[in-house]
Image 1: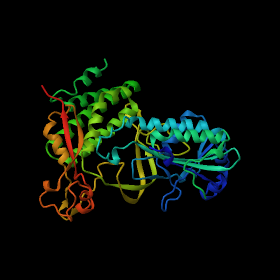
Image 2 (image 1 turned 120 degrees about the vertical axis):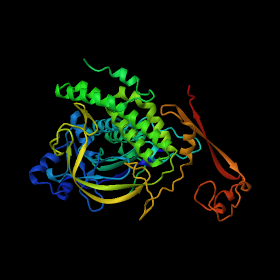
Image 3 (image 1 turned 90 degrees about the vertical axis):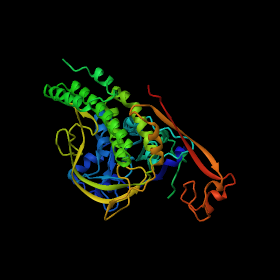
Image 4 (image 1 turned 45 degrees about the horizontal axis):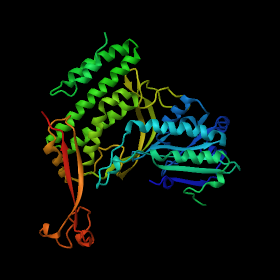
Length: 192
Length: 266
């Protein structure tokens, strides 16, 4: 497994203010969202552009139980909808981090949550020699993306889409960014 | 006095075990614990109840396989898998009781011919908590997490408003029961090749008997397949024509030999 194949990094330009405008957040609620350490954004699908990933709700409950940072959802109270997609992948969605300081703490909670969720389906099916393992028996997969400012104030979107066992690489990338070494990133970079 | 759950769990693999009777007793005991507000004991009883159901469903899977009802057995095995995942999320001790069943189910699934499944794309607009009945809200959490057990009951999502957005065909579905079958006015037709499952069932004679299998690749010569022409489907099962597949292989036609190893029974 080459973990780098599951990770992409690209510059990200949209601001929280633009998102709040798109999501029609009432003016009175905007301060709360803009002041959060972490903001969850919709993932969208076909004509449901404002829908959130299926696993976000449970992740929010998990993160709020831990209470290590303030997390908000970029969505009006009565506008929260979810997309339940087909494959057995755990989809957490997209998160915007207000500062590099939150990066490592947030990553700690995300990785803990993913392992906590994957644990029940471990140990995995041991591949039988000479036979292709059916996809439904392969290692559990997860997808999520994190938008994080680097030390120069530019935002990067890091996306992971692959097996649970490869997520530690994301932690290393976030650490690199939060330590101010963003210019050293080369993994699966998408140039725009 | 509390029930001796360890004694019950130790008997679950006995021949002819009456799962329904035990489930009935556990249910009453759980109700009493819930009424008394003894959440810890109610949760232990939930775990015991789930372990019993897993054993019962596994026996049913085995019986369906013996009866040649392979798709139904597949669906029952999926129920075993789902219950084991919920159990493992809530009780590490409970998971220890069913680890080997989980491994058997995954091995069994690997012998099935199913490859593609229908899976829906659903836009969920409203849902509520099965524990407290409150509508899920992003700002006011009810405090119950999906898949966790509270006072002896599993927390689930009840979707109250949703819109179907599409059906996709996938290889790794959320719901394994959604196997694709051709159908017409006369109903569903099952043309799948269950040779491997049938092979296993020749040797697997008791539900909790241990078994495993190994696969060896060999090469066969064209003469071993009378009537094989360049236009025939390749006997290796690739779906290509013979001329585009194993005819190009100097070693011959790929062939896999499955060997089942089954624990002897006294």
